Length: 134
Length: 71
Image 1 (cartoon, chains in turn yellow, blue):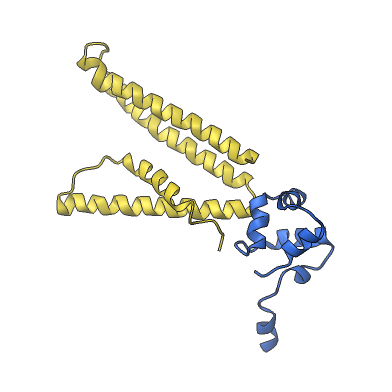
Image 2 (cartoon, chains in turn cyan, brown):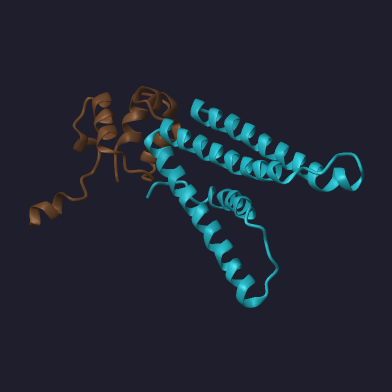
């Protein structure tokens, strides 16, 4: 594995760990802790701040991706760009379609943060098929 | 783009890794050029030509040559 990919994986791992840590604190502080009398509920401003943290971790992953694209050679850069454009396009398209289904067809509501999971899901799905720059 | 990179590389008994190292690109990039999954940039094509001591058009087939003559 080359150095840019290693750096990308380490950075991604750290941002994912932060994301999961904040998720854990939010779950504990908002739902589980207060329910079982272990923790005081998190206050409104703290909840807002922690919600913004999720966005920052995603920006961090975006930054790591841009660094990977910058440091890779032209072939890897081209393939990565195609994969990311395809995955993000599919995630946006499918989440938007679901949004319309919610409004017009009574589909169950899915929280907005799920679009991020969809992106990674689609990225994993398109990677084996997008291996060229042509 | 059709090219002679694999032929030239094996003629020198270099691995894709070795050629990639000399060119400053990944093994995957060399493989993609050899299997025509990537058309190299002009800069990379010139680097390849310089490494093998040949002109770019001796390595890469110019698919537009006929069109130019027709015009």
